[in-house]
Amino acid sequence: MGERTGLAVVAALMLGCAAFGPFPHPVPLLFVIAAAGAANAAFPLMRTFGSALLGGVAAAGVGVAAVPFVTCSSERFTEVFTCTADAPTWHLTGSVLVAGLSGAALVLARVLGTASLERRLAAIERAVEERK
Image 1 (tube, one colour):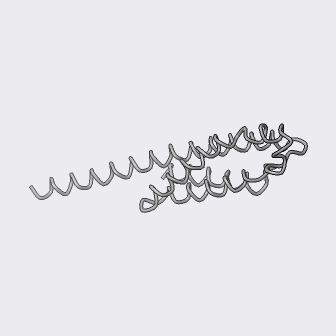
Image 2 (cartoon, rainbow, N blue to C red):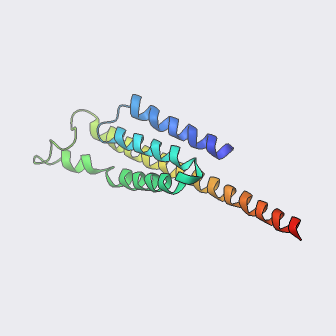
Image 3 (cartoon, one colour):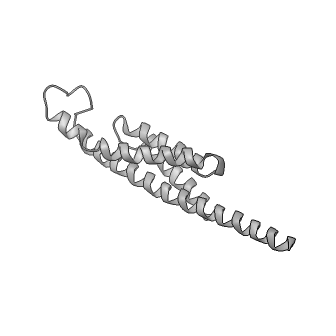
């Protein structure tokens, strides 16, 4: 039950960052998608889908981390991301944070899946032994 609690805590952290963090777009959206992935990964039927969401968000977080620094330094692309004040720094911080939390949720989902599989295999072994 500890892994499910861990996934719930990570999902709550992600939603808190999306709702209250000073992160410019699209970082809050990444947090919400990752929280949905963590919630799905807590259930056996949706674990694969949740893990896929988490992996995609982790890759996207790493991929878009430095983009505002590049686009904001060019005169041509200043409309793509918010380039005022500390927005590029907060974008980088949020992107790295969402990638890290998604990675942590992926590890928890993997541990939860392994424990569930081990419990099922033990139940099958007991049933086979009882029939002998």
